[in-house]
Image (tube, rainbow, N blue to C red; front, side, top):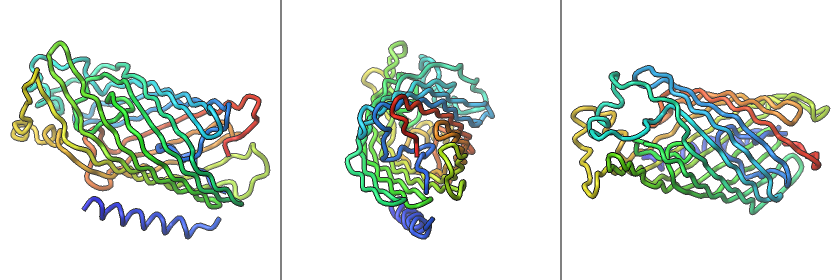
Length: 326
């Protein structure tokens, strides 16, 4: 059912893309495009995500990202993040913690530093034409986040240590841009020495389908023109169940289904699709602001709740290259 659903979505967005015949942006707020930063260009991004959990607690995630064009085809990205999503350590009574941590009796976690995430992208194909191009890239990522994550869905940007990789294809035609990402994530288990508990999220297959459209300006007079774009990004995730064990004893999480079905489901294999919608403003071809919301589209994630707000501020520093971001 999941594969058929994705085929319908791909046909739908591909149809929209070929119907648009009008200079576009591909500065996707969530997914990475296949394009790379010019050599010697540096950029930084400040990001935050916000939602309310089942207990109506305010859950906040913050990140600082640094990007650098190593060569014209190779971009390196380093991100540091922090949030109030995790407890410091699993308690000795870890079974009771897992059973109750989504209930209204659970307190709000303190803010803590999560770790670093490294993302390397290499562009392998670029075919350019008048107001159009096609770019293909491959990427690899790794994370050292050693936090007490407690859901099956892995996330290298803050929740799990691990590694992954994949491929990206991005096409631009006049005012429209379409990008498709396919990737894989292998999380590394989190070991809590104090409780002797090891928790490992499931392996994950991902697909991002991103569409961007330039609303303004209708025609460029200078690089200083204000740009405004809209984006729709479909985020599909398919992951395996988590494992929880103390020493060499694997804990049977099926017991959770009687006490807290939400906790039980959060530890099982799952697939879902979210829709992320954004407005984006680019100022003087050097600074951009993204404001967006993530909506539940098909099934749901158990690592966040809906709607989820997101804000990015990004600044590009061009040095001697003088190159702009479009």
